Length: 268
Image 1 (cartoon, rainbow, N blue to C red):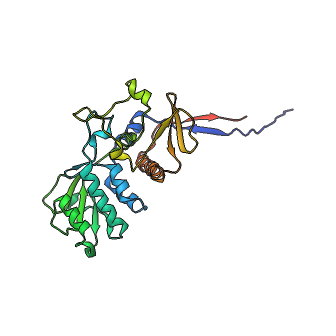
Image 2: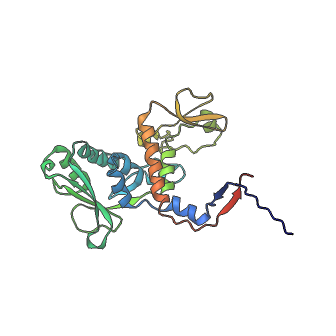
Image 3: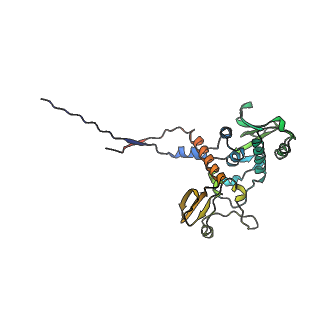
C-alpha cells in the first residue's frame, strides 16, 4: 500500500531591489533635461519656481552656480537672473507665455514664446534689455548648445538633482550653537560681513530650527539635538518640496532597473 499527503501553505514574500552605486549616481548627478522643464511647466508649475531650481546659468546671468555644491565661502551672483525669471513669471500670470520643445537645427531645447500682443509691454521691453535682444523681442530659445548668432538664443546650464538639493539646503536656518562650533560653513562678503542666503532662496523655501518639537510643522526632522522643520503655513515652501519630489520622480524614472533582487519570505 502506498500512502501520500499534500499540504498547502501561503507564504507572502517581499522583494528588495538594492540601489546600486552607478544607478544612484545617475539619479542625482545627471543634469535635469530641458524637456523636463517644459513638462513641469505644462503641469501647472510656476515658470519662476521651475527655472530658479533647475537652472544655474542662463546666458550671462548666473543663478548662484556655486550653491549647486557645498556651501560656498563667497557670495553668489543671482540678482540679474532672478529679475529675468520674474519677468517671465509676469508673462505667465498674464497668460501670454507659452513653453514648447525645440528640436530645430539638430539642437535640443525649449522655446519661451511671448504673445505678439505683449511685444510693446514695458515688461517685455525690460526683458529684452536684460537678455540683449531688440526691444519687443518675443521668442527665446533655451539650449545647452553653445550660443549662436540667432537672436534670442540663450545657452543655459541646468542643475543636477543633487545640485538642486544643495541649492535648497541654503534655506536651512542653522542653530547658533552649530555656527559657533564651526559645524557649518558661513558665506561672507570680502568685508567679513555674513551673506544672507534668504536673498537667494527665502521666497522659495525656509527651514526653521529650534530645540523643542515644533507645534506647527508640515514636515520635521530631528538632527544634532535640534528640530528642523517647514512651517505648515508656509505654502511656498511646501510647493517647493512638492516640485522637488516631482523632479526626483522624473529623473529617477529614466534609469532602468538592472540590479539583482532579493526575495524573502515574510510569513509561514
